[in-house]
Length: 148
Image (cartoon, rainbow, N blue to C red; front, side, top):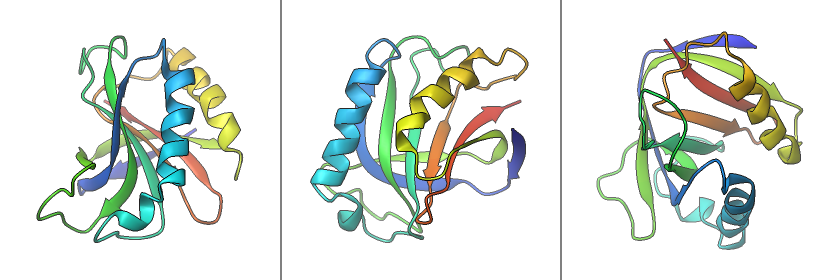
């Protein structure tokens, strides 16, 4: 694990899913299939780059814990969004400190397992506000968790 300090917010547009940790291993793979199968990445205007983001936000207990419902938005970082196209939602990844957990490149199937490691780490002062995954075109995968 390494840490990353960001100084600018990032705006992500993508398709939303309301779920929780009890349903996540069932709901999230289906959501990703929808994102890919319906070619949503190509439909997102003003993409900043080729990265794909999965943003976990709007927690039922924001700032406290990750229990209860939250929204997952799978999409792309954009330069701006004058309007949010129908079918999409937006999320802002705020600037701040993030613990970065790498996943074996190209191994999307290992992301859920890595999240289990993240949540088991009791030494992190997690913010429980806006965590995200970053998928680079070269296969690199990172889980970024907001920390105090």
